[in-house]
Amino acid sequence: MLDARQQQIESVLGHTPENIRSLSGGCVGEVYQVRFKTNPAVVAKVASGGNKTLQIEGDMLTYLREKTALPVPEVLFNSPALLLMSFVEGNSPCSRKAEEHGAELLAELHQVKAEQFGFDYDTLIGGLHQPNPKYDSWISFFAEQRLCFMARTAYDAGQLPKNSLARFERFAEKLDTLIAEPKHPSLIHGDIWGGNVLIHADKIAAFIDPAIYFAHPEIELAFITLFGTFGERFFDCYSEICGLEPKFFEVRRDIYNLYPLLVHTRLFGGHYRRAAERIIERHGF
Image (cartoon, rainbow, N blue to C red; front, side, top):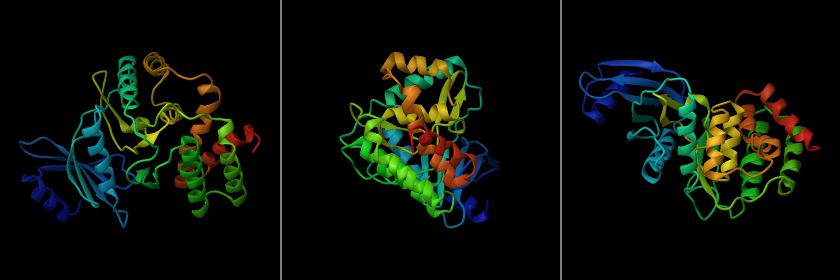
């Protein structure tokens, strides 16, 4: 970390850092744990290059902390180039009790409602722009602002061939025959893979790196299956609280996972593109 950043941390918090070490993660910059002699440790995210979007992450964390009961780090300082947060201890394996706790927390989060799908401002997922214009229809929002938008983003980056882009756009036009409108727009975290879940002593200590917006909660549940964030006990517990509509696992899970697969296609290409293409091939596209 540059000396200027250390000086900025000292200026903001009023304490001189004693030790700074790198942490893993961080799609939009470098991540550090900052320790002090007597004060609690903090996490510092520092923007790299011209990608100065950290304020959006800080705003999302603040929203979750103020509007929901989801455990997230406290934002101590928020700017486009520097984000300071409370340090949350959490590196335990995901136990059965932690899965149950995660289900309870997300079931409660998904009960936070809005009048429309989308959000008050655009957010980020994996460092990529995530547009959130307000829509009355979930199917239209998912088709236009998630599938088609990210397919075009991957195409523009040279990660998706033109013929594949056209297939995804044709598939999006038929979504009304495959998915349904939810009872209401639900707030979702939006990026729940294992690295964004901090577990300590059989409890979820915090969820980090959100990609929030109001959506159908099934897209959150589908994402959890994509990378095996939680297992069977999570879904049993979540279903006991909220219920799951028939054919979620058989049909809609893969459809909703097209979005994170296209995000990963844009970022990494390769087998993520083929995984997404295989899903629409099963539906005749």
